[in-house]
Image (cartoon, rainbow, N blue to C red):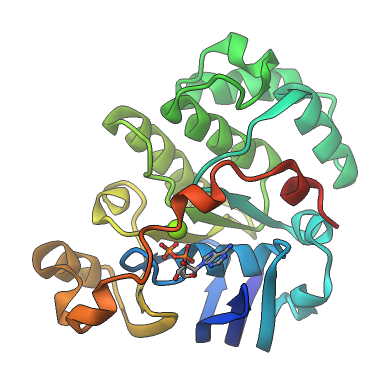
Length: 271
Ligand code: ADP
Ligand code: MG
């Protein structure tokens, strides 16, 4: 059983404070949804948790089983068991998915011998065409294929915690169902450490298959409400209006999407 603990986390990007004291504790097997309007700081939270360059932690702590995550370079966080599925998966020309996963398992001190069998089984389970396993990472894949591909990586690497930044963006309904169901199954697996999940989204449709234990509503860098799965139903019915004033729902800039699309190679390999 593992625990990811975020305490009073504050952070800025480009000199502007975005996160204003985030508290969240996620245990193995739990699914926590973080829901919020555009510009609320959802992607900033995932970037800070993973140590993406350019995001400055101002205060607070993040620990994984008591270990100081914020002191670790990004690659160590991944090896320690944190895995980010990016909103816009990075294309990595020249790096094949199967090679990359083999390396990643080895780096984690795990056996890569059965990898090709696991890959085939997972590709079938998630509905990813087999030839895509031997293609360069995310290059020339459709939105749905990219997210199936990212979910497959999660299933092969078996991190302790997954942070899904809008797994539902750019997905058709079939791919959404396949991906969210796979993540849900990983969170329900028997054993002492099923996957813990932070599922960032602004639509509740992701949560039809991926059932949250807790729902947190993030507005302007603050969690303004936390509750059980019923909170997602309230949002679906009433929108964010019940939790935020109209000006809080109007981002200063539009969705931060284009800035993080595509994630650069520098980000991927940053230490
Ligand atoms: P969300 O994912 O909830 O839509 P983001 O975390 O992407 O929100 O953005 C939160 C705020 O931080 C927005 O005001 C956005 O403009 C700003 N921001 C995010 N990334 C950057 C960046 N790299 N440079 C400058 N501002 C940024
Ligand atoms: Mg975002």
